[in-house]
Length: 365
Image (cartoon, rainbow, N blue to C red; front, top):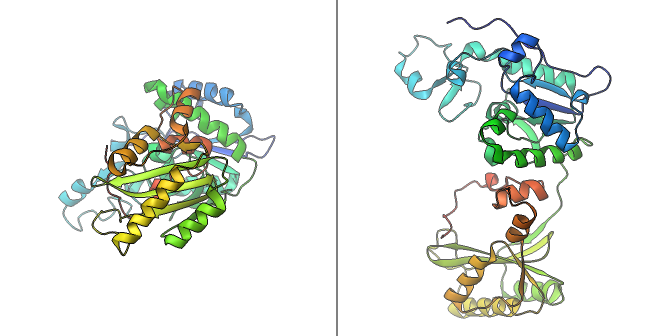
């Protein structure tokens, strides 16, 4: 089946420099008919989302990863699976897939005859030179990062990092507006992303706060941190991690920029962090003393952590007063309450778990 020859050019404002470049997947029938991106049902929802977020559509650029409509079978028509590749005789069709590009979805690679869109998009980005790129959906995320999984990345501010695609631009991924037409509950998430985009479009660099985390402390370090930062703290944030039926570590923070993590085992739970039983007992005594301080305690889903501390170690959490999960739910009952979602709204490090090099032990539920 021959591909359609009709292409839809990007929208680029002629009266001002576009601070944001929105990238979608591909034009649909209405976009092809009018020759403009995002003018069909998804485009109408896009307009409503932008108005809610306070963004003027005409002031910013809009394009797609593919500037021509996809085949009737959608992305299956422009990609090939690794299994399909293996089924081909070696050397029979060396141009079947563009091997220089990362997989566009799990186990699926872009067919060679569609790879020219990557170069076209990179040229558009360079020509427009936006302050911020907002890739909408999996394919758009892939086009500027070489990664997929929009749910795990949406709302997180980062930089383009796709070899052979484009680099050196700030990005803020979010859902494609067409996703909202199928899953209305996600509408609030994309609005929060667009509101953040309105703030981030004012400067090209990624601005992250400088956080200090004390790792692998010894007993003198815990005593010093308690005396210097916790004894007179106005509020103390507390968080534990668990694995294999035990508490593996506990962290304390007097502010959002400073924290101490007290370890008791590694993530597999196979060895003890402390060299002697006496040292471990002293570490738990210091943990008990910190949790007994009169300062209000701030936790995330603290009922889980508090019951683990009491059931496993008989340590009460004194003055457990604030809970970020409950406060977030009270403010935005329509939004998910996981840390990734909350991080994407309140901070720029929304997808910090994507930074892990090794999969951690699953937390006990």
